Length: 291
Image 1 (spheres, rainbow, N blue to C red):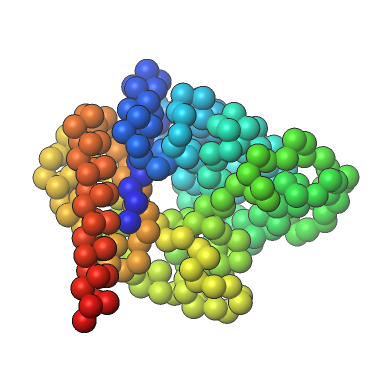
Image 2 (cartoon, one colour; image 1 turned 30 degrees about the vertical axis):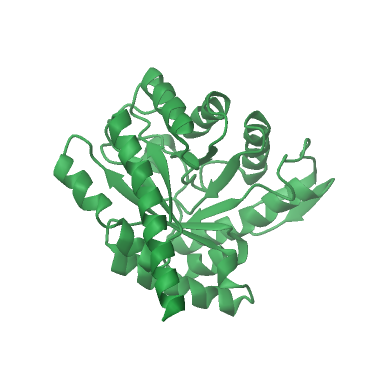
């Protein structure tokens, strides 16, 4: 299991810049932010906007993949989002992971005057938006008339550096969204706060959703996300101790989301766990083969 990191957007920009540089230098595979207008934990927390921050992250890092985990389909017209993503893919030199989801933070929608339809509608919007976005990334001109979005001879140039498209990351847990994930995703992510067993149950349901749409389950990389509070050392120890459980259930990438600023020593500890978990997995695989 590989470990990547995500830093809270309530940190000051100088703090974020330092954390991104450090994570990139240490060798984390990916660095993430999120896409909210209000604080995801406390609404009044001052936070930076996700996509403009992501563009800055793409400049400051050199090797780590960058991504937003995950934007809500309700926030932006998918054609605009496709254009934004291509720009960040070029800024990063082809290191973008493109995230999208159905959204959940009703208060920020209401506060900003953004429509917040029911969950079934939002899931259908993700499905249609990804159809539109893929067309824009791969076709010369796109005319599309769907249930939610309409394009007329739409252009999206330049195309992404990553061909045919940046990896698509989708978050979700419910049956309708799992079917969308099975159709479109290269990487699936789910919060791990309900524990490894719950994650494993949804992971197994995603296997079935892939089979139902005729896709190999292995084509969708599996990931989880755990929140860490460095100001509470026992909480950090407890969360990190669960990594092996997630790995045993099929988690291929763990996103460690830092809600308070981590020290370099803590980041190094997390990276060492990445290597330790992978080493233990190799030992177990060898033992099973020998048996």
